Length: 66
Image 1 (cartoon, rainbow, N blue to C red):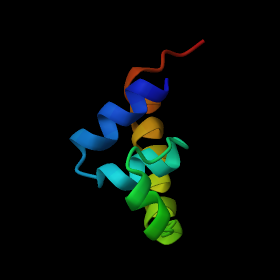
Image 2 (cartoon, rainbow, N blue to C red):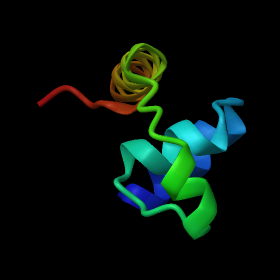
Image 3 (cartoon, rainbow, N blue to C red):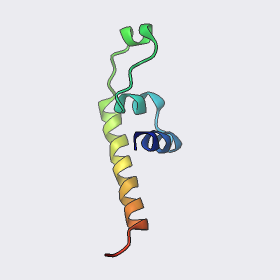
Image 4 (cartoon, one colour):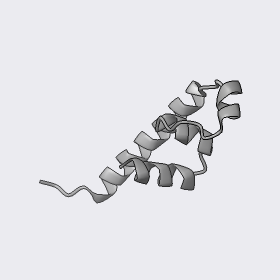
């Protein structure tokens, strides 16, 4: 599920750094990690709302009545 989310969010044009932070991936560069402590909470909240909207649209499109 995390891989699907990462792929779709990248395809939708969300910044790589925001996606990686949301997935709790560690920064690969020690220098970058030491200096950059930005969390991008507002942008990530917008991204997660867009993800939720995407999932709702997919459910509405493909769900079958029971």
